[in-house]
Structure formats: C-alpha cells, structure tokens
Amino acid sequence: MAEKKTAYVPRLKTIYAQTVAPDLKKEYSYSSDMQVPRLVKVIVSMGVGEAKENKKILDAAVNDIGIITGQKAVKTKARKSIATFKIREGQEIGCRVTLRGAHMWEFMDRLMNVALPRVKDFRGVNPNAFDGHGNYSMGLTEQIIFPEIDYDKIEKVMGMNVAIVTSARTDKEAKSLLAKMGMPFRK
Image (cartoon, rainbow, N blue to C red; front, side):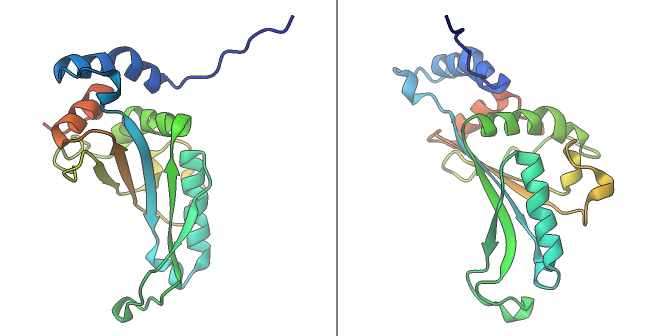
C-alpha cells in the first residue's frame, strides 16, 4: 500500500491560518472566514536604468531576482520614450516577478525574518506606505540583504521594490494583518 505524502505548507502560512486569521476575525468581528484579509500576491521589481548602455546589468538583475524569489523574472520594457533619460519606447529597462502561493509565503517569511533585520541601521519599515486600498509598497536599497546573494558575484548593488497586495478593504485592516504576521513597522 502506498504511503500518503503530506503536502508542504510554508511556515508563515501555518502561522496565518492558526493565529493571525482567528485574531483578525475576532478583532474586526467578521461574520465569515472569507472576509478575513489575506495576502493575494507579492510583486518584486527592479528598475535598471543602466540597462540601456549595458545589457549585462539587466541579465544580472534578472538572475538576482530569480535567486531571491525562486522564480524567473520577466524583463519589463519602457512604455514611452523619454528624451531626457535617453530611453526609447520598447527598450528593456527593468524586471519584475509576481509571487503567489507557496513562493509568496516563503518570500514574505524570508523578507520579514531574515532580510529586513540585515539592513544597516534598521529601525522598522514605514507604517504609512499603504495605498488606500489595503496594499503595501516598500523599497529596499540593496539586494545583498538577502543571504542567497553572494556578494562577490554581483555585478552592481541595486535596489528593488516590493508591493504586497492584500484582500483587505482598508489600510487599517491591512496594517493589522501585516503586523500580526511579523512585519517590523517603525514605531
């Protein structure tokens, strides 16, 4: 008789299901479990302005995001030509990756518990970076805060943007969700 394999469940997802969701349901007195705010997706993007002169830097950025997120990044193209920045429409100038499911939970766990504490002079993330619809955006100044990145093998230290999309209707609910999951907000 074949053994039944148990599916892998990310640590942060287990914490969300066992403690965060019931706390939020009680705090906001939701009548249904489906009303409780949850993570929908996480978008990690990197703008690489120097890619217009050096394509090697864009390939390095795609590789770095792939190592950090565990998913291959998509190169993004300029929507408009901007003469002052010497950018033509359709030119590849960045990369991004959209994380859902297990990849999203693993990335959030590593971001909050491993990468953010490694930031120099870290005092917490900005508590006011919500967009009014329950989504949170933050910028990271360097990709080397992630332990997966080998400092000796990077082409250039680059920053990245992380957008966390939640199903919360208000910023207060979204902030409560992220805080209960362990996001280190500045006091």
